[in-house]
Length: 135
Image 1: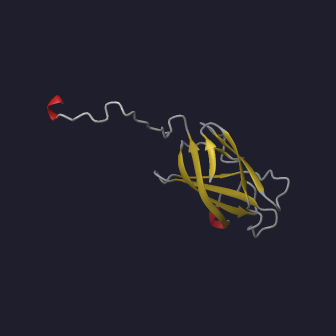
Image 2: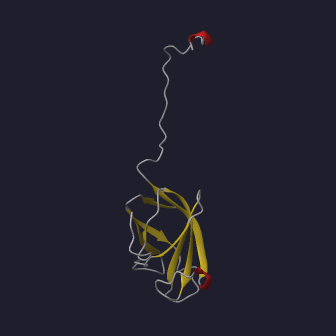
Image 3: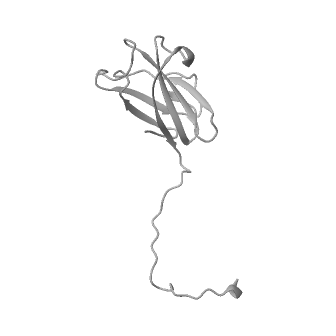
């Protein structure tokens, strides 16, 4: 799973070169919102110094994007499925001519996300009788 804070930056470490069939491929990311099914395509440069071991991409969440390149995405907080494709051409967003590599889950968390809170109950007043006439 990739976690990205809304209006934040995250480094995504993946192992794509190991399953890639192209020599020195470029990557297309497709993210699909789990609720709305809205589809977003973008590219990101592999900045890993050791691509035979791992691949690293910087992802940035923003409210406005000049384009769908360099890992800059304009998506609201939510849960997304991601698919990654390899291509011969940098900044090519045509997944029909690309080869599928891998999928997973991307979570963009925001300030209004729910959080779990622990609940503790004291022994005081736990034996109160409920009276329907009190309501």
